[in-house]
Amino acid sequence: MKLLLIEDNRQVSDFVRKGLTEAGHVADHAGTGRDGLFLAVSERYDAIVLDRLLPGGVDGLGILDALRRQGNHTPVLILSALSDVDERIRGLKAGGDDYLAKPFVFGELLARIEALVRRGHSPATITALTVGDLTLDLLSRRVVRGERRIELQPREFQILEYLMRHSGQVVTRTMLLESVWDYHFDPQTNVVDVHVGKLRRKIDGDAPQPLIRTIRNAGYMIDAGA
Image 1 (tube, rainbow, N blue to C red):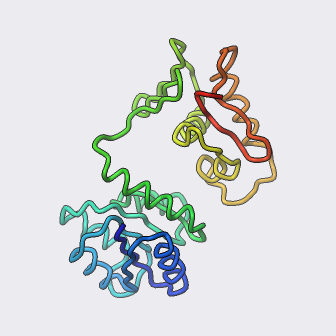
Image 2: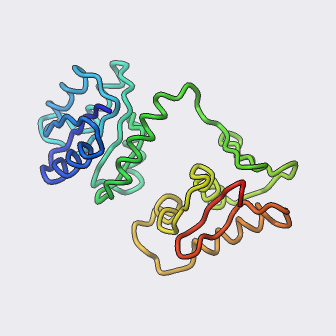
């Protein structure tokens, strides 16, 4: 992939560029908003990693606005220390495709970039997720197993969606805390286990083929072969 990193913090930019290069990607870098916008409109990139707060007269949202007004739909991952919910909403509404708060783990950053690029190359938008005889409709928010309609609370729906998007993979408690509860710390409670337990009873119940299972000392997995 050919990527553009627009980031004024030298320590962060060096760290990210090193990781991207080691992963086999080409990464151009701009340290100001003006330079970043120039590269973004003059070169073709698979994705852009964009800081919100930039020197040079143009901030991250200004770059996003300029790109989208020109019809440039290059996937943009906003990487910012502005981490509260309102700021993330502002970034996404301005045209960002994803938002990752600092501090961050490079592995997650890379995974999100790769997901954005895959999504951009996808011929169709995914509107439903299926694992075995379980279907989750992302538009109507209906959950059906076989012929049985399952009513879920909003948090249960979020957990199930995350598990199904990672079908066949181990999902850790930390991953669920970050993605569903927006916790970036350990709350020292069993909130994840309690909610997953309720979800499992609704999804699996008395079904002969359970889908959700606990992976000891690791987390959870949803799998048609469970």
